[in-house]
Image (cartoon, rainbow, N blue to C red; front, side, top):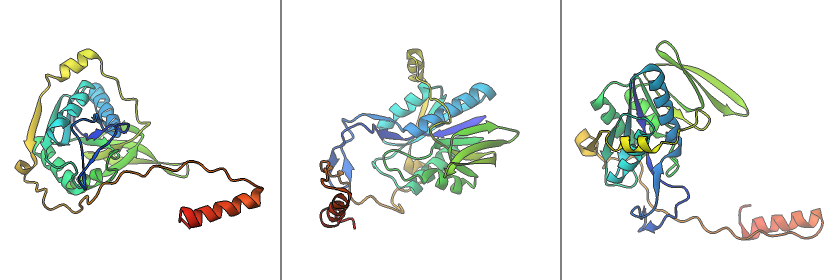
Length: 256
């Protein structure tokens, strides 16, 4: 099987982000990691290849530093990687999907393309859908159960209200993973060392024929979330407390 896993290099959610200018941040000092949802995709791909044979290829769109996340995925068991290099910190989902599509199609013919349901930094949750649309492939996201059949994948996911949906998807397809699908492995030291020798093909986004000048959306401004005010204790009986709460919501918080 030829499995491609789309992985994003993202800031650690616990990192302190320093905003630079109107729409950028200092990415030279903070800790970056593999997008957590993508780890489930890497683990699932590795398990499938361990059982059925084949190859796992990591595909990333990002700056040169994103090599670190590709190496981390390789330490989990992926065989090689492709880094589509860009200078921008933020690409819209359509441009990212076009770059992923071009890189995958230039490299080979996928049986399954996996990726996390979304990225924890921009949280657009659109890239996999746009990638599937561009490649004319079926797509299911937020899967937490998966089995392979004869030329098909049977996947399950939650659809809200405690309901669960099970779908049969023909291969090739695009699948978005989420928590519960598996337990991503923690690479051992020998695996980390082996990953340093695995091949990564770096290609500039322009060399794939993808322009960054035709973005459908643009990040205008980044702002820090304002500090939350301290909790307020409302005195009096229930009626007095409710009246005080309504007044605060209306006059101070201005949400009603």
